[in-house]
Amino acid sequence: MLFENIKENFPILDQQINGKNLVYLDSAATTQKPNEVIDSLNGYYKEKNSNIHRGVHTLSQKATKDYEKAREIITRFIGAISSKEIIFVRGATEAINLIANSYVKPLLNENDEIIISQMEHHANIVPWQMVCEEKNAKLKIIPINDNGELIIKKIDELINERTKFISLNHVSNSLGTINPIREIIEMAHQNNIKIMIDGAQAVQHLEIDMKELDADFYCFSGHKIYAPTGIGVLYGKKELLRKMPPYQGGGDMIKSVTFEKTIYNDIPNKFEAGTPNISGAIALGKAIEYINRIGISNITKHEDDLLNYATSKLKENSKVRIIGEAKQKAAVISFIIEGIHPHDIGTIMDSQGIAIRAGHHCTQPIMDFYNIPATARASFAIYNTKEDVDKLVEAIEKCIKVFA
Amino acid sequence: MNDWDDLYLEVILDHNKNPRNNHELKEHTHHADGHNPLCGDRVSINILMDNDIVKEVSFTGSGCAISTASASILTETIKNKKRNEIEKLFKDFHDLVTNEKEVEKKLGKLAIFEGVKKYPARVKCATLSWHALMAALEGEKKTTTE
Image (cartoon, rainbow over all chains, first blue to last red):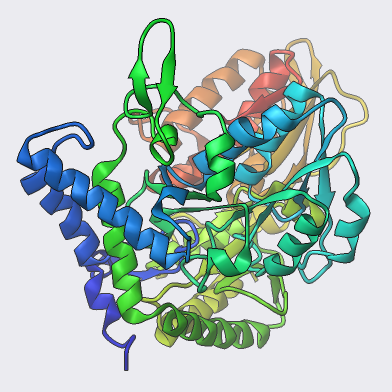
């Protein structure tokens, strides 16, 4: 069985926490890294470290080649047309800030509108609030229903001639909802509106293809897809990226500089000012090769099995309430236990060696919607097993016993 | 013996389930709202001071077991105490849960929170109501644990 021995690829999982074998159920916050990603980082600094795109010496050429090879791997992974459409950023947060500032801000006039949804991560709320404030524009919110699904028919009502941009998450980090983004992208385009998709919680679970989705912009963070922190990807359609002004100025993003005039580099370099996270980008390429070998459709199936198993187990307990019961879900389960604060659940779990997240998950508007202060969240990845779910269920029973 | 017994002592669990002085205080001279932005916990403290002595004290809000029990025990502890005694208690309590130095003074019931120092993520839960209390005494309306 493909997933049986996968934990062995992740050295961090082979340890005890508070005297118990670690059960890591916080992959929506960050995934653990397989050996080949760790080895890639190590190998880069031991053998290839140098600056890219400028050295004539051999090390620089090696580093440049690996860095650009990673861009090619990502291009194929997300089905982009060209590697020029792949911009390395620090993470999804930086990608959204880049688009907010370089694409959307110049388009905005007073009273214009940007549409986001009730289920966004703060990273897909605050950058839009900032540009709206600066330009006296307005933020409009697609509401959700009690299951944690977008109310699609409300989008039509929100779109009008003042709508300048839409930004939505593909998968909700706290509810697990998979949004019907293909349909929404089509709605946006029928109204001549450009749209960005925050895929930070999607690319590690689902097969995606930019040509098929037709999103104008798409982004994700490396560390949520088995790669290091501090590296992420912004995808943008070539024709849009070419028209945009740079986000930051500096080295590597220019063709020539005089005090009178600077000529910017072509994409993607125009958006990669300064020395980038070279080792991170190369390791992200390795992480994606690792995923490709397992097969993203196998990963989706494995995680769906875990989600279904965990959901049915949690539902057996009348004191547990699952927050977010969308029909289409990724392997994320937010839950609350009657009479027990999520922080106390988190501490009891930790004492059992189980790592879950407790809090508002950077989605306070969702917590307000459900009128709860926080949830406990278990999120699953390729290395999780049904035994992990059993341990979670056992620990939930312990929580109930302590606080009964 | 459970793995969490050093934190969730019986007294703490009892105060979480049946918090004392957990209501509004219509007649009060000092009030402050405490907020832990990290987890969303909120605790408000109301005090009626008379001649530099706490005559009445109550709390409202919602939080985890540690923050609820801490607020509950705080209200029991500071009643009929002078302002400077409370300031000293806060300092000692803070040292107790952060383990910055050994606390020699007897802290009475507050000593049950000593287990918190083994759980650094929970220190702010234990001190939230105390931060609100100090803000109230200083005439501030709001405080956060940040």
